[in-house]
Structures are given as structure tokens and as C-alpha cells.
Amino acid sequence: MRRYVRVALLCLGCGLCSLLYGSSQLALEQEPGGGKPQAPDPAAPVRRQRAGGGRAAAAAAGGSAGRGEPELPDRCKNLSISYWNSYWMLPSDVCGMNCFWEAAFRYDFMKTQPAEKMHLAVVACGERLEETVTMLKSAIIFSIQPLQFHIFAEGQLHNSFKGILILKDVDSLLYVDTDILFLRPVDDIWSFLKKFNSTQIAAMAPEHEEPRIGWYNRFARHPYYGITGINSGVMLMNMTRIRRKYFKNDMTTARLQWGEILMPLLKKYKLNITWGDQDLLNIMFFHNPESLFVFPCQWNYRPDHCIYGSNCKEAEEKGIFILHGNRGVYHDDKQPTFRAIYEAIKKYSFGDDLVNFLLQPLELELQKTMHTYCGRIYKVFIKQLTKSIRDIYDRRSKGS
Image (cartoon, rainbow, N blue to C red; front, side):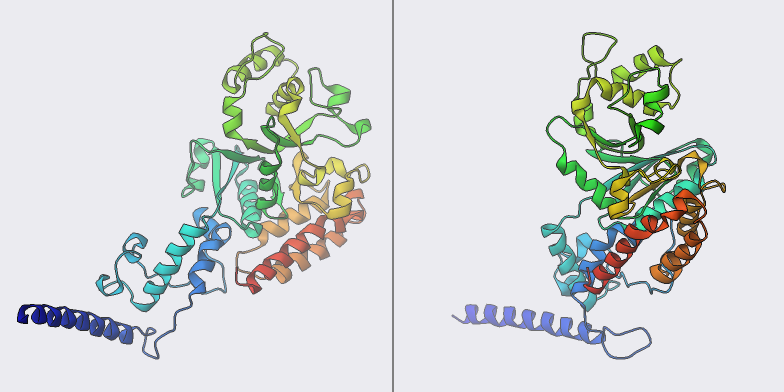
């Protein structure tokens, strides 16, 4: 009997020592320079996890942290240590109270709400570095879920994109040209993947809405999709389906896979191709129209939609979602409306107030472009941008 009493007393003593040690460590947890212990904010770790599409993505792209916003402490040395070790077993160089709460909420969030990662691809060649960085900035500003960038660049540009991980095998991908600017979250165009039917493998916008000014229906010397063709500047792809797809073609009665069909098509039509990969895609989807999901023109808004008069009705109603500055309009004075938006996003610094440092200066510049057809409808250019900024502040006020 005495033996059992001794064991019980020994266990009780060990437990009491552990409790006293933990309490003493909690009492020592103070702000730098003294002061009262800081109470943990259980919601803070969750907010940081959800912010992957914002400053976290900016850091992944080699960007600096937002100005005017203090860095949050990240004193947990290793998440794999902090969530399975009990508090009193943590190493001495790892914080106590904050780390305990942070580990618990991080681990719970990861188990219950895994964040979907969106994949954004771009090809940067020649003098396209500045355009590419500005495009990535526009994606980071508004997006909600984490972004993974896939940048394919010439050798001399590789060092400029260090720190961006490139995955070799992904399920879905959004490809954009370097002269793209996002005026609403990437999440919204990414959601089109869920609208694909069982035969659709990719989504693009028409090249034109007005056949009278269409290029393909007037000049193309090869097959093209639909009435006016499609534009490949913004292309959403289900890569898993593309890898499995066997395409009908006009070279053989046998269906060919993606890797088998591109070079033969290029050889057959090389003397008739004007717009490179876009022409090849038009040929492929001419023979496989059931495989394409077509989204409206406001998801790929180009100068052609306003230089001869407004011909994108969806943009007039809801605003421009994705701006495509082809024809080099970001860098000359031919379409100052497009250039004004490009310059505004390029000059914007992460962390600055979006209304005072982006929206208001931009609207003043756009008002100076009203001598052009595109400038006359400049409010179409900022309608969605205004909503996107308002949505950002709404999310911040709700702490998400």
C-alpha cells in the first residue's frame, strides 16, 4: 500500500513542478523593453494564414513588405515542433504564450480550411520585365487565395524573378500575356474552372465582338474558332484534361495529343500564321469547339473594344475585369486611357492606401483622356476597380 502512495505522490509532484514551470514562463512573456504581458489574439494567426494572396504572395515574388504596416511577430521557430509539443517542452528560444496560441490556431486552420492555391503563368521575353512585374502586382493587390507564379523567361531575366517557385506539374493554370492588368481578384476568373462541362479543357474570350472590325474573319488564311476567333492573352486551362485529350485535326484521321499536334500544325500552317500560338489555338479549337469555354469580353478587354466606339456590352454594364494592353498601348500615347491605368498600378506601393494613392489619382488622369473614344467611357475602366478596392476594405474590416 505504501508503494502505491509513494508513486501517487511522485506523479503529483512531477505534475506540480511542470505546472509551476509553465506558469513562470508565462509570467516572463513580455513586450521588448518591459511592460505588461501581451494577451494573445487567437484570431490573428488565422488572418495571417488567409492572407496568402496578398503580402505573403508579394514576398514570394521578391516584393518588399507593405509600408506603414508593422511586421507581425513570427516567433515560432518551427510549426512542426510547436503544435505537437506540449507548451512546457518547447525549446528555450521559442516564445511561450503567443507561440502556444498561434500553434494551436494554425494547426486547427490547416486541418479544417486548406487554402486553394491558384497558378498563374506568364512568358516574359525581351524588354517585358517591367510589364510582367506590374501584371504580377495587379494580381497580388486584389487576389484572396494564395497565388503560385510560373514565369518562363529568357536567360537574362532569370535573376529578376528569383524566389518564385515553378512547379512542373499542376492541375489547372491561368496563362496571361505580360501586358495584362487584373482589376478584380484572380479568384473570380479561376472560378470558371468549376463551370466547365465534361468536355471543356480551356477558356478564352473572343478576339472581337464586332465582325466588321474582326481580324480573323477578314484576313485569316487558316481555320479559326467561331465567328471572329479567340484571343489567347488570357487563357484558363485544366491541364489534367489537356494532357489526357486526343484532338481532332485536319492532318490525319487519328486523334493526337497536345504534345503530338503542335509541331505538325506549325509546319502545315507556318506560312499562314500571323499571331503565333494564338493562331495555332484557333486552329485546334476550330476542330474541337466542344473543348472550349468562352468567357465574356470584360475578362480580356483590349483597345479594339473602344477605339472605334464601345463594343463590349458586358464591360459597359459591369466594368472591366481584366485589362489587356496589346498594341503596345502602355508605352505610347495612342491610347492614354490604357496607359494611365498601367502607370497608376506601376507607381502604386504595397501598403499605401488604395483610394488615396491609386484610385483617386487614376481618375484624375483618366479625365484627361476624354478626347479619345476610350477616354469618353473612362468610367467603365474604373467601375470594377472601385468595387475591388471597396471589397478589400470590407474584408479587412471583418478581419478576414
